[in-house]
Image (cartoon, rainbow, N blue to C red):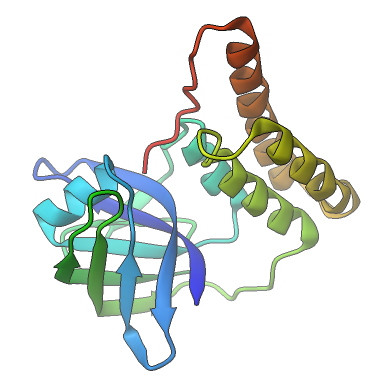
Length: 201
């Protein structure tokens, strides 16, 4: 199973890096998480260096969207059992340590074990607008790997659910993502070759 989360790692200087990531879990190993960052990746570098990370469960989709366009200044607080940081708006978090690396040229497999977990607020469920923002964020993270026409077609479908159920948070997050797509499209049409979206895992 893949859970859409916010992973926070930090380097040796204590600088935190916030990244949306799909974390792999297994029903047979509930205290084990698999993180699969692409190379090159700040998350990968930090995890290999510090051997720890914090997995945050969050229903504020602005964090997912914001990180993809370079907005990473979300309020943090210290982790409880490891040297790390937790999102203040997280509904729950899990602190993990790296126990095994299965190397790969493109996407190493980082196997982590739970050190500590905590719940902070109840999860009330995602509405369709939150789902739409999450799916759009995933599409935008793959702008360099999926044809733009296909991404735009899927965005058009996701917009239906957004327009029916969105609140202020979801509309703000969606606007950020649409600006990222527009900038990417304009850069490619102008022939500048610029594909910068602020994405950095």
